[in-house]
Length: 241
Image (cartoon, rainbow, N blue to C red; front, side, top):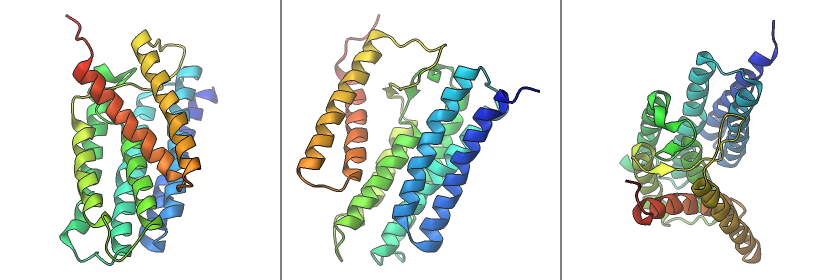
């Protein structure tokens, strides 16, 4: 019996454990920061399971389904839980807007289902990946609580973010990935996009440090640039015949 075929699924399971634990911290403990850290750990495991599967040649249909189920928990339900808990910290849990983040969980499920049956997304993405959506939500909530006040833009910013991200999850916008493996060959355009994002990310890090902003501003800034870069390229890049 080969042990290596179980390694990717074991890593995926750690993603799921982080997601479930993060939901508990958000809803039961009201601790969005610990939930955020657990989401970051889930992102690491999500990246590593796919990398391990490609490097070990241990891909399986069960692993594919387990990965989607884990991602739904960690990057669909968990960000919705963090947003709803942040809203409750503002004393607004009685508002109808409190329930808007549930829409994000729903569209995350739709996005993951589409990903599983879309043959175009082996080496890149169509629509915003769920980990990117989740990290935008969590880092935004972290910043809102860091600068919290009885009344601040979060009252409308949280539900608006949930709605916009829900659209981006299922739209037809092509987005590049950082997937690596022996069977993945990136084209020059994708390498250029990656280089541009890395370069801008360095600038964002410098600005956040210079202005002494909370470190989640780095994550928020990088993923906003990622969305903008893909959108601008789709709008203005020459189309192939």
